[in-house]
Amino acid sequence: MNFSPAKPTSIVAAAKRDGNQARKAWLALLVTLFVAATTVLAVRPAEAAPAPESFADLAEKLLPSVVNVSTKSQVEVPRGRAFPGLPPGSPLDEFFRRFERRGQQNDDDNEEEPRRREAQSLGSGFIIGAEGLIVTNNHVVEGADEILVRLTDGRELEATIIGRDEATDLALLRVEADEPLPAVEWGSSDEARVGDWVVAIGNPFGLGGSVTAGIISARSRDINAGPYDDFIQTDASINRGNSGGPMFNLEGKVIGINTAIFSPTGGNVGIGFAIPSEQAQRVIDQIREFGKARRGWLGVQIQLITDDVAEARGLEDTNGAIVSSVNPNSPADKAGLQPGDIIREFNGEKIEEFRELPRVVANSPVGEQVKVLVLRDGKTRTFRITLGEFPTEDEEEEIAEAPVEEEMEQTRELLGMDLRPLTDEMRERFDLGEDVEGVVVVNLDRNSDAARKGMQPSDVIAKVNQASVTTVDEVVTQLDAAREAGRKSVLLWVYRGETYFYFAVRLADS
Image (cartoon, rainbow, N blue to C red; front, side, top):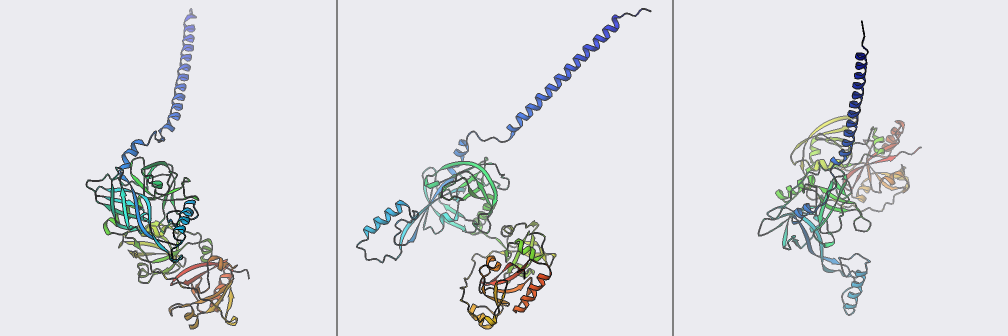
């Protein structure tokens, strides 16, 4: 049998050729995949929203809806301040002061008597209703005798105030125009994210129609401007005169109202604050319907749960808000809430920070029944409370502190405080009603922890660690019990100025 070497040789050669082709195919595939992956990686960052090439189209569309708001009012000016609009110590203020002094050399008027002058202020606003509804800040129009709105086309219209809300610094104005005005739409501030582009339009320094852009720097800022602080922070330039102007997203919808700036000089340093549209729209809608903002009312005074308070109460964390007092006949009082209760949850929303509770209560509709989870005596209890309407005016009295001079033999020093029983004489001295029970602080060491925490002479300690006390001996008993329990602090429930407060005071080592 003859074996031809040609066949095997051709099979091997073919196999080699096929192998080379296969390797080339795999190599080509790998290169293709690598290129594709590189392309995906290169393209992916470009899929994120880039910085706009221009805000011109957006600005052109929105500018007609933004207005300048100017006000005039009569203010009292002390002698020596010639120009109320100028900051004290400025060169122009000094110039006008000297000029006025020369003109009054022969004036027999009393130099100390204040004079009335016309003060002017400038701000911004934006149109939300074609019929002439304009939103601005309350502080722009507060106390104004005359309000003038200037449109971008140069028209000037007199404005009237429909309603104001000092708590959120919002106001709604109305102007009468011969034709419908260009209005803007509300957007969702809840959907806005840190890093999103925003555009601010307003009237900085009275220049009018200025457009600035930036990003959202932070959310839920508390700047101690009011009980419902929940500001959007932005680095878009905001200056004096921008107050009341809108903050837009890139869709041209209002997601904030420019209200405040943080600046040591009064000029822009890249930290501005805007009221979120979710909060502003709710308030403006209520003003539009009722002439005022209507807020849910629980009827409690609350305090922050500090580490000391948590330790004194044996709490594992500082979440929630502690009830320091309950208003008589309030929704909370009728439902059974008590001082010392710790509100952990309100209508399904957990209260982790103290400042969250006033905001969620205020945002709840008047008359709505809500579920409130409370920690009392180490156990969680549920209350169903029908909310009332927050009072429009707070009636608070400032109780003047009377000087205290008492005989030492009737006084006992505890925790750096001189304590005395609440006698009829003490009630008369401090103007305390018969319903107030406890021991009164007649003096305290300024270097004591009680003084550092805010205790004052004339305070009445009504409870120590939730136990009522009417004598100094009962205070001693509760302090000893706290020490035996290994507590480092003691919780005092204190009456002051017709309301109650909690103070967590460190126990002395002895």
